Amino acid sequence: MSGMAFVLISTAVVAATCLVSAAILLIAERYLANYGQCTIDINQGAKKLDVQGGKPLLATLMQQQVFIPSACGGRGTCAYCKVTITDGAPPIAPTELTLLTAEELKKCIRISCQVKVRNDLAIQIPEELFLVKQYTGVVERIRDLTHDIKELRIRLVEPAAIEFTPGQYVQLEAPAYGDNPEPVYRAYSISSPPDDTGHVELIIRLVPGGICTTWVFTMLKEGDEVRLNGPYSEFCLTEGDAEMVWIAGGSGMAPFWSMARHMREHGIRRPCTYFFGAVKERDLFFLDEFRALEKEMPSFRFLPALSGAENDSWAGERGLITQVVDRHVAAGANAEGYLCGSSGMIDASIKVLKAKGIPEDRIFYDKFT
Ligand SMILES: Cc1cc2nc3c(=O)[nH]c(=O)nc-3n(C[C@H](O)[C@H](O)[C@H](O)COP(=O)(O)OP(=O)(O)OC[C@H]3O[C@@H](n4cnc5c(N)ncnc54)[C@H](O)[C@@H]3O)c2cc1C
Ligand code: FES
Image 1 (cartoon, rainbow, N blue to C red):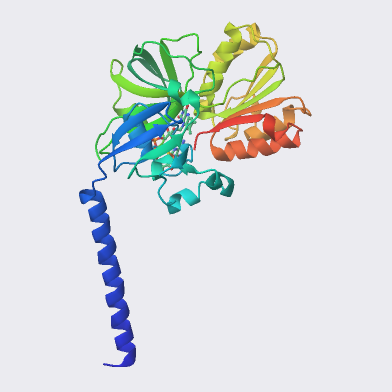
Image 2: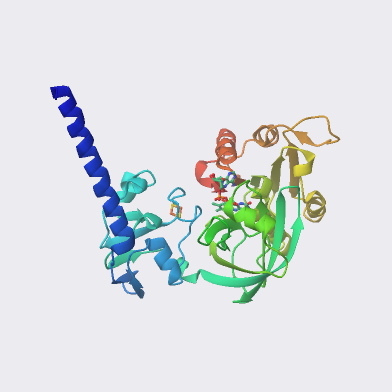
């Protein structure tokens, strides 16, 4: 055998041995590892949980009715599920490194869906997360708002009432179906006003091939029982009376429909311009409702705009929503920006608002993707 052939064969043998060992380790981890009972101490003894080890921290806490925000359902992409682990933390997983800053790592902040519970842990979470609850409800009404957006009205059953501030979201549970062996949770902003404590309304846009939205659009029926947990998020109206610029597209309407109705019902008359972007006329909704609101609240202005083809009867604003904002917003050092929708739309809107003089710390948003 030549020297070269010997090197090639040796390399192949070593690589194959490594692969087999890695596979054995994975199988052992999956089927044989038993981490037994573990204790999770939350906020220095405020709550102590006895749990079965072996599952991700996020899922383990959820099983114990401790709910941590999550937007990607535990897939390690959204970075919403951060917790501080003060004792017992395992080594950092590579997926966490892309989601945490050096500062966060120094403070022992971790991505809870990527941390497996293997031993006793001590963790720190914001106190308000103890107020997050799981709700069961019944779908009272499903209606089409556009060709790909539906509104769900859910009557809460247990508990029968929810407290939240306009702008917050809940996580809706889509049960296991078809090729999805486990329930998944997805974030949806509450579109109903907080005074309607017995209901939660959601505005949901179909994502083709999406697990939760396919279930909502093709399987969920009026009268069905649903489960959700929440509320989450710090996206809400500030206390002051600063002028507001709202920007949304598609189902990004949801938190603003809650905020607008809350403002009407509570006599909040801050100056506000709401820019709502859509592609075609068929993507617009709630036009009559917002026209009525404008009449009741003279300091409130609704500016829907279309970015798509011009061979239609639309006589309103045209262009990308950022261009419309640029045309209508005057210099705004004292104003506040509120944005909801895709991350592309939000990043572009932040640039425009900053160029208008709105300081970055006065621009609030919830990114949907
Ligand atoms: C704080 C927050 C609030 C939200 N509020 C709302 C709301 O009020 N209404 C609403 O309709 N959605 C909202 N979303 C988005 C929602 O949580 C889901 O991500 C979305 O409905 C898709 O879920 P799915 O299970 O159907 O798709 P998945 O199975 O999660 O995704 C399927 C595929 O589509 C991609 N994808 C996921 N979401 C989107 C998207 N929005 N647009 C394009 N591609 C996507 C994924 O990358 C994946 O490739 C919100 C998200 C966050 C983080
Ligand atoms: S739930 Fe999204 S990163 Fe953990």
